[in-house]
Length: 320
View (cartoon, rainbow, N blue to C red):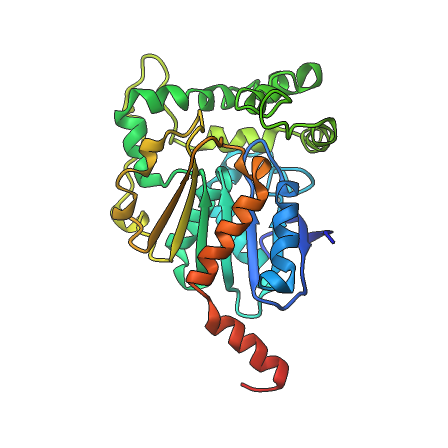
């Protein structure tokens, strides 16, 4: 059963959250992307909360700017370190030592997942990334690959000052193609039912400015006509390394994020597994949630965070 709650954090942010599983159990955190929300993880929350699949405490926040979470108006309030801080402070409310057994992240959530694992590797047991580019390979492709530049051109539209007004107009007419152009409708994978559309309407009706601010604040988007790639920053290598055991799940029919983003990923992520999924798109969590759950479970079983679970069981017995 999914529980919902508002969690106030020390930095003044409030995150609306969805969760399943017993508080105090080893923690899994799930981060969504654009234009989604925490509800996309419901099936996985219940799956991993089940004792048969690890009995984790599973928490999926709505990122700041989404659904009922805090949505500051200032564009600068959406810089990556601040959203990473939100997740770190949320984890500290759910885990006695502030650690996560696993961090699972998609799209924009993955951007913050990569950053979190780089900055706080001791707090993340395992990292799972679903179709979200690593900043090292994304920078390379945005600077050098015209195909990825074209595939990412939508980012500049979403950064426009009037983007949220355009997106909200006429029952979110410009939002549905994000899904429908990647086979979400009845002639494709069929997951975008009227019930799911209503869930999205409720999320988007809470406001789209926060979501668009993510695109406004980031310098990592393709150059506009007349601009050069020099505006795309090249981060120092120490900001790109991820030493946490990492599983990258990549749907190959993602029209926005091309497979070239996987090339050279092991240079930054030495403990890396990659699972390429044909006939699946950016919305694979909607399309094949059971496959996603099984693959994540297999990765966790191959790379168990057993020490954490053992410590938890020892506390239950009154041990040290």
